[in-house]
Length: 48
Image (cartoon, rainbow, N blue to C red; front, side):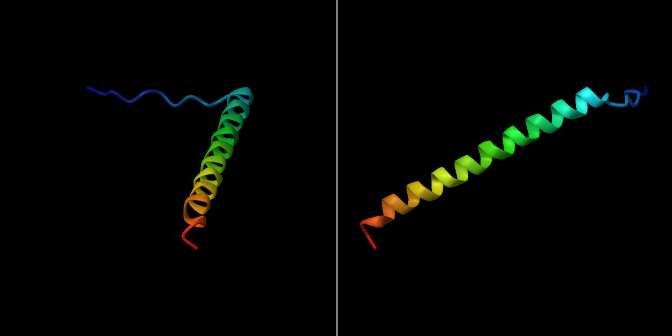
């Protein structure tokens, strides 16, 4: 039994939407990293 799906080329609109979602996810990840960094500095600020 062959369960492979046929290869489908993505349209330019699909690729543009995919890049847009990737950029949003990257910015969210950067924001979380900055938030964790600032939170760490604030929590350790009294101990320094």
